[in-house]
Amino acid sequence: MSEPVLVAGVDSSTQSCKVVVCNAETGEVVRQGRASHPDGTSVNPSAWWTAFEEASANGLLDGVSAISIGGQQHGLVALDASHAVVRDALCGTTPARLPTQQTW
Image 1 (cartoon, rainbow, N blue to C red):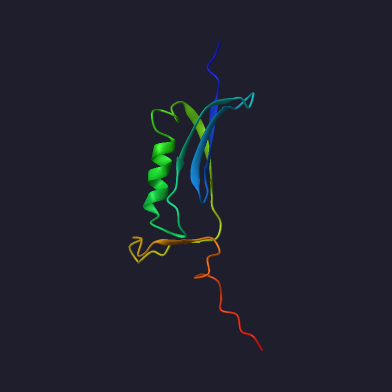
Image 2 (cartoon, rainbow, N blue to C red):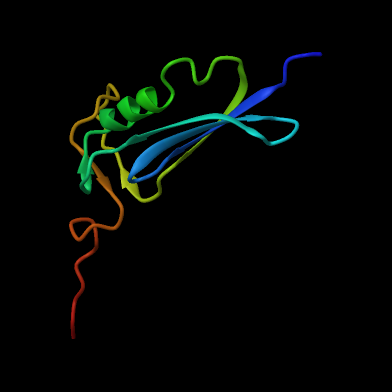
């Protein structure tokens, strides 16, 4: 009997990073991992990578043939000309990111 084809899905949302490895044919969840993101609406983007590394540690992705990654919406990561992060990322629709409203 041949080994099952494994696929992985990653959800890097505002609160955590979740990784699920499934049998591609049956959809059965084979293994999974999770790691929290820091609290707050202003976060160093390296924290998201650290959470992914933690969620996928200990060989969780071993044998995976394909991976799909979904990320949070409404985030701003500012980079300089050499693609280095210049400040913490702004996440979600925080008051600091909302346009100023004028009242008439």
